[in-house]
Image (cartoon, rainbow, N blue to C red):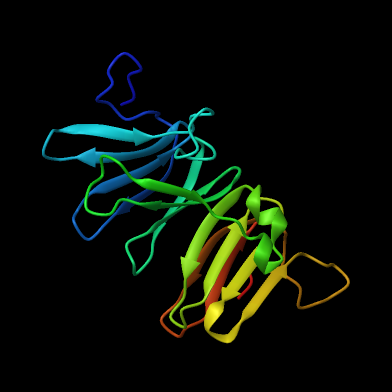
Length: 182
């Protein structure tokens, strides 16, 4: 339970994502930051947004956590994506504000990111609360942005995409503010 008077506790009771990495570290995305549990010290540590520090999260509101095969954490916030590289220590991570402008996705630099998923074909899917879905397939140099278009029958059901999952047949499912499409 969050206790603002106890710096060892979780930062907030409002939890949006929980992730356990290969080293059994528990990562928690909250509205007050990215928390991780240090079992050796029996305490939570937090990464937050510090306006005067460029090596901090761009927003303390952490909606989603994704760890890639290079052990980089992709942190989806209400203001875009941060890449967090802990290297060999969690005490001094390098935080990079992901800039998607070079891929033609300028809006993703400030979007409310709800989910990040890498599928079995190594494509990255990034969901947002109100600006649709992004597909990044660097192997094939494909970068697409999907928005709801009611005039197109095969359009995504809603521009509010909240969840992404791949089933055992390789179909990608999207949970949206509208119907569910795959």
